[in-house]
Length: 314
Image 1: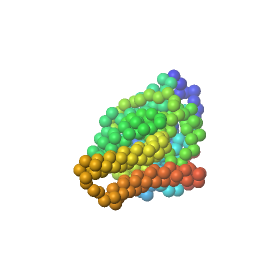
Image 2: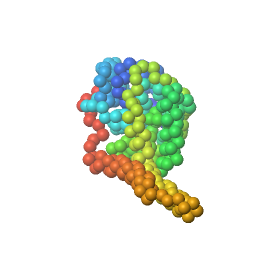
Image 3: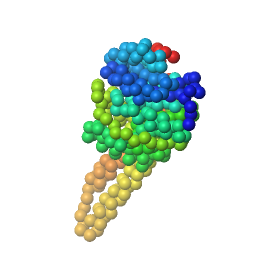
Image 4: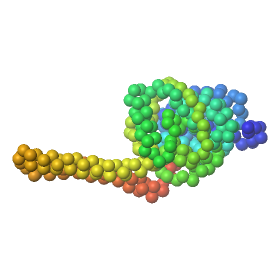
């Protein structure tokens, strides 16, 4: 077990991405401080991801009161995964905990995660036993994780989000992964370090509205599938086989009907059906290839993941 009093720099770093969370900043700060009342050697890094409300002002108030609290202010909204990445890059601790500001990631779980880390686990996932999300989000998430588990080349733990603890060793390895389309859940799993779970009940959001719109959730889902699986590229093969199989059935049916019953079919009818089938196949394959080509293009630009305009208490 690591003794906290031997470390001058923060032993634990808590990273919190924020986007329009003015009602939750002080609440989550108080809960973290209360949960870690037996730990003096920690830092909290809020990342203001282009908020348009008073989130930054609330963070600065906390920073003035407590020098253990730090702030990174983005020039605009760069997205949840970029905000987490930025926060982790500025940490000083040996154990790095990431959680959202909406209090659906209960800070009380952090102590249990630290205990697992002290036992030698490099990654500790907070795993959701129950989630009180609305029907569509809850069951679409269940379906998504089943598909991701089935087709991903890397086994990504189910029912976990970005509420996790990683060791400094994991973070150093993670910094070597330079991809622009960030899917940190998959990236951490890909590294292959020893991991453990802490189970918890995911509560409902208390204040504000989630910044994860349907479009953002779909983008994150696409990042997870396309970044860690080549299965979509194989879909064209399966569709091609199905198209040829269905076409062959049509041909056999037509031939048998002509031989047995003397029925005559106009050729254009069959050509029209087959052409329609292959047109659909080509559209789908073009879309899949376009997704991969677009990602290659984005990676080739090598733009920074985020732009920090101000730093507080660093």
